[in-house]
Length: 458
Image 1 (cartoon, rainbow, N blue to C red):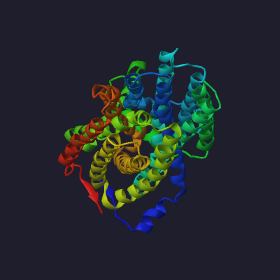
Image 2 (cartoon, one colour):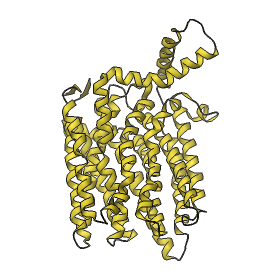
Image 3 (cartoon, one colour):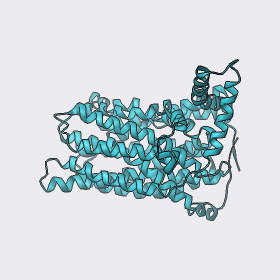
Image 4 (cartoon, helix red, strand yellow):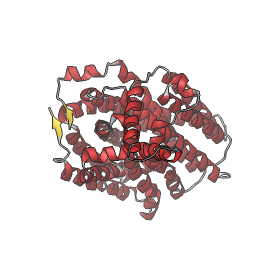
């Protein structure tokens, strides 16, 4: 049973001053930053090199990696990185390794031209996505493990801080990316995007330095529980040899986390949870994938996008994510989910109004602000929900399973966003109306299972 207790405003906000929240903030930034690289930066780079909306949309399929990182999440929970693990810890070793791969990919991008080497550019982007999706497995596990298993209100606050951190990494990284690209372009550099990627590489290095201040804990208890599960499997074999040891390891690593999830929630409810997670943010993803292309087509410059969509959007996201955490703690995850779904659908319609109006900076700012408010509420509720569901013995694997299924809906379906706009002959207004409708199926599923989830709100 998941319990979220109500408390006073002062008690709730005091949680945010816990030093652990600052560490979670950094972990969120580490997780969010790569999305700038393979999201808005890559999209605008391809757009300004003359590639079509459909090509840019299909290039977004590289995000599909996030939908399947649960497949190798069990390995991340078990396999240790030689030398690094002993020196800096199991979780941090994996993050540093993946950050190093991202840095190498940025260097490769700095010497490539999309019009001449599109396949190579997308391939490097795919490697960034793989490294990012892999580090997310460990980042989420390390973030959850910063909070005690029975600290429900701290977990909700931690979810809010993780979201603030994610959007900070995403938004501020986007600001640096866009301003750097425009500044270098104005100076006359033809390879301004390639130089921008080298600048972004510096941020990767700084994040790794900050990571060293985050401590790890609970590894011994996790190993003990995993060994106990391995013993249960091993005892079913009449004899012990290399083959049975291998089967035991595979069974404990792969099947253990999945069986635990279905056993804890019940088969039907578990499937319904997975269905809800898959569909909840599909509409938001359709909008997000094409938003920067939409802004560019209706006449906004890179600096305009940086100011309104990134800087202003980041401030809004930070404020309303913290308020969203307060709402989750006081009102419960379910109410937050329903409110977030309604907000996401409603704010998407503001973009329809923007599309069918003349270029308006005021309307642009309003649409961005309310979209970020909806995204803040949706994300903090979503993160708190799945964080409270995971078994601490399989933190990385179970969280990765739930998060990646949510990403599957956002990436696999939203990859057709550019093709949908083209099919609509560039009618952005209708496109945004369709994105608003997409949230309805997930809310229906949530309504059906809400009483069976046995959420206790005190």
